[in-house]
Each structure stands twice: as structure tokens, then as C-alpha cells.
Amino acid sequence: MEYVIDIARFRAQFPALADPVTFPNELIQAQWMQAQCFISPGKTLRGHCYESALYLMTAHLTWSNHMIGLGQTTAGVVTGATISKVSVSITPPPARSAWQFWLATTPYGLQLWALLNIKAAGGAYVGGLPERTAFRKVGGVFN
Image (cartoon, rainbow, N blue to C red; front, top):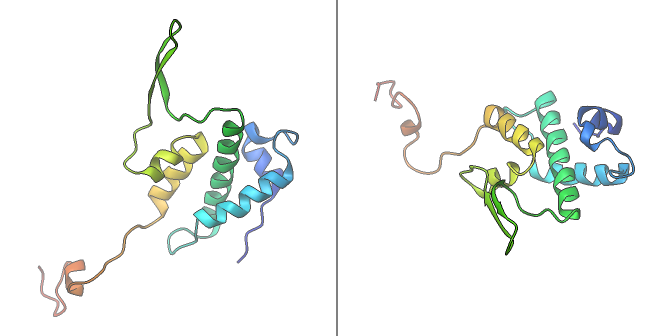
């Protein structure tokens, strides 16, 4: 199934991105296409949840690009500032990976991160005996 963005729904769902002058339809459509490179449907992420993930990723990409355009490329919380000899202290968002850090740079990315943590199954089993992935051995005996 091919997912097509509904721009009116997108603007209603993300009011901060509703201004058609700042965020033209073509920009949102381009970010939607890019979002599909980041988010793939899976066994647990499908249907409405997959579509929600695409909308959130589109909002994350759109907002990130907007902030970069405004010259705000630093992600984190300002924890201190000095005026004389200009000094700013920033604490980055807590993250265990670059992916999580990047998603934590926008409110939409944080929502997406939460959705993916609940819905997307991660990891794969590689090598070894197949019964080591289960509670029982191949013959049905408990480990």
C-alpha cells in the first residue's frame, strides 16, 4: 500500500507547521518522500501506526530544516549564559545513540521516538543454536 500525505491533515495535526508561506506544500511533500527513507513498515509498525510514524518523521524533518534555516543548529537545553566574553552552556538531550539524539532535537522526533519504542521491534537473531532464542530447547525441554 502506498501512503500519500494529506497536506490539510498534516497542517491540522501540526499547527506549528501550518503556515503555507513558511512551509509550502512542495516542501512538506519533499519531506514526506524523505521520511519514507527513514521509516519502513514492519510486522508491528503498519497501518495507522505506520502512517502516524511517517507524519511524525515528516514533521521532524520539516521542523529540523526550518531551525537550520534560522541558524539554530545546536540541539540541547541552555543551562547557562554569560554576556561579557559571550559564553553559552548547553546540555544535550539524553540519548543512547546518534539516532535517539537526532530525534530528541524536535518535539515531533520525541513523539516518533516514543511511538517507535512501543511499536517497532528491533534486533535480529544471528548465528548459534536456534533454541537459544526460546525458553525451550528443540525437543521441548525447558532451559
